[in-house]
Image 1 (tube, rainbow, N blue to C red):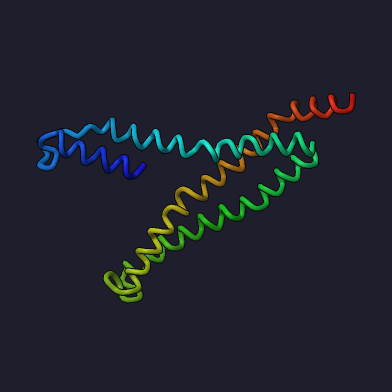
Image 2: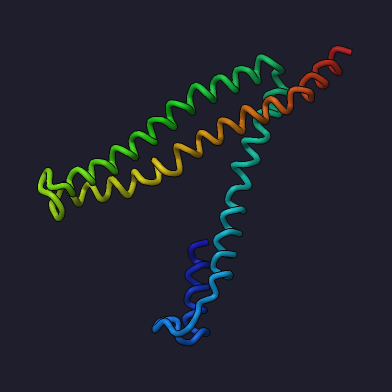
Length: 159
């Protein structure tokens, strides 16, 4: 995706006059289309995993299996999401603390390390933690939606 985007930007610089000096207007729609297309394609496999896992577990192991899946996923995902959000916020606040003049202030080695930490921490705080929250809610919702299918499968096996 990144190479395709780079190729598109180079093409626009080559074919649309005035982009570099600000007199020309880039084709934003094409760049956004490339990013959106690749983001949606990249989400296919994780989406299938989160949709198919409760279905397969429920059909193979029934109610106890789906209960174990939901409890295990919730028990492991919630602490992980909380730790990632707190860790990211801590790295962000460490940078702000140093920029306020502590530990050598801006330009010091501590500040350089804090900038790297903030670069790692921001995605944890802003994307990974909340994404895990959404993932666990989706897993629980899909598990509940498929309950009639599990029951039908179970009754069919008994009869």
